[in-house]
Image (tube, rainbow, N blue to C red; front, side, top):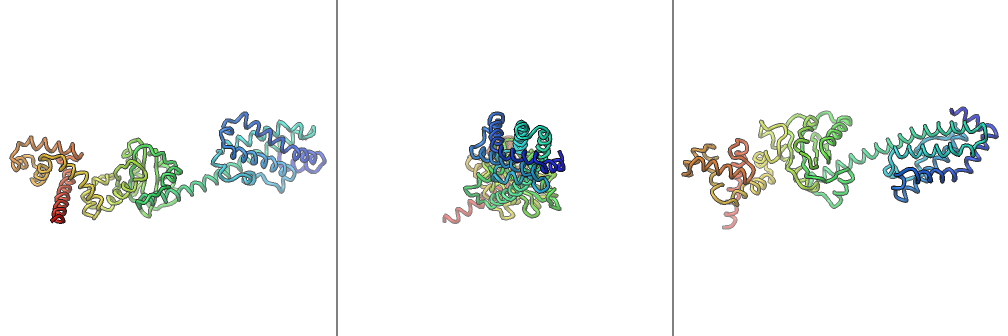
Length: 400
């Protein structure tokens, strides 16, 4: 029924009697509602005891608010925020909007079922109409409460996400890092990589929201950081993370996008992030680099740009494994690149058959995962040999 009908009810003795009966039956209605919740609603029994007690207060508050509105519809309110004021804000995280609407519907049914006892004949239909109208308005208001809570939670999550990404970049994750990323929904399944590139301009809330949605569709675990004109995305999961990164390229601005090396844990993602950033700074030295390039594919450019991590990677992952493999692999590689990557010329210099050189080059690719016969990978290996020789000379110099 409309507000006018409710107001007319309150002007005579009958409606005052209904209000009196409603007030006297508040505890009865609340108990009946909670009994039905306990018997008919599975999620209610799964809640913690404290949350169940808060729901009891919310139900009681809702019934009291309805009575106040029914008595004076022109001055009372059906704002769900007032009803939920009896409970802490955290309750909206324990029960969903769907659960809240189910609670409202159940309370309405309880009041309707008891309308015969609470209203005199002739007033029962009016009471039912008032309950239905009030419950509809409360349902809409409850949706607003949850929308505001979700908006506030989203803003907080965005700030927390920015802090986490910044901490990873600085390489100083503290003991709370795992709990922070867990709060952001990070599951921790599979390796982690970081991709970095230019940010599309202009940066506004709509574009930022689109980027976050696209990133969350690309991989199981995602963190997004926007740092000035740079976009940094942390990807995790047991899927093909490079393929996931490929799908996100349209979300970046013009230029090269660099993918850092994979790490086993998100708390170690700083290594991937720093490598990716160093690669982004060095990428202009390789004009023909693909749109999405691995940070380790830029090892020579990064080292020339003063990246100590790149120098260490060239030593530990390329030069030293070849040294440890023994035999003539390192010598063959050095002679091969010195002879302009000519099998015949390298074979003559080494006094072996070209097939022997070819076999050794395949063996090198097996040991370090880089193919000397590929022009780009051969260049990386050539720089690794130079870095290794300089490191050995420096060690010998300090040892004398």
